Image: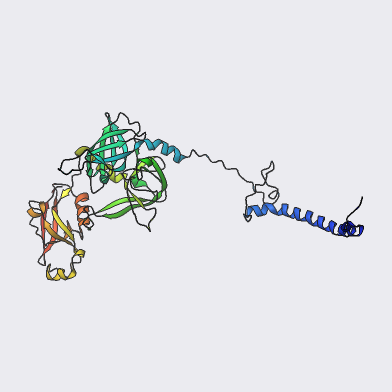
Length: 404
């Protein structure tokens, strides 16, 4: 058999000299790689994933005799507590459809049309009637209301009552189709950092029953609100803060804890381009007495003074001296712009231009503080002592509060 010239005996002998070291080097390199591989896997320095088989002891080859530690197999069960809770609670969260009539050219109302969609929570079932709590702003202006159940059944609902200050409303509907009511929790015991789950209908009924998860980001947050759109803060809502996603349509829906208990009524979020994950809910412990009063009375009866007022911080300082003639010791108060006729304030002798500084000895500086004191500390029919200034002179008067 012939050979090509480059396979001459001399060249084969030369190759044999190089072959032995090469083979030895390859073998040694392979051994070193096998020994070093487990350590490299543990340091996660490799650009890809490698699964190293275990022997019967549960140790990889690189771990045997080195650390004495054993690896553990973790089983993940997708049927977690959250999925169980959501499955249980979701049927009690419903859609609330605001239907409004529009006047035509001849000022005759048309058939009600869908004007907005929010969420609600079925919290009670009694004597064939189901009760739903939602937000006041969800049902505001409605001529008719519909509740959409989790199975998409639509049921006509009636408004029992609503309250603009707490942004709560109560509806009733026949309980024939209702199978689930939510369990009420205690928002006073919530701790920052514990899980929070929001359920509602963001954007539209196409996303009904949407679930988002987060934590309680803060408690007892005070959020200023302009209720009549005049640019002046009228109230401060005390709310829970959560980073669970809350979007338009979630209003009135449920914020629940890990036990599936209702701890808040989703109400609003900060909608700014630079803000993410800041939503708010009305604490259920605050909402419960309002809900009960709406059930019983159809409205919340609050103490009424009968003044239109704003804080001195909104009055130019030059007017303090020239018009109000206030002494330097007065650093804040409530300027009375107008007073309702036959109101408790009018009967007590207060006049426009007076500056209230104290209620029962408690300093007051703006309309929010006035309302909080009236609504939380006083009841209709009770008396209240008012300290005020008129033409630079301090005086006091006693008013008998009426019902708002």
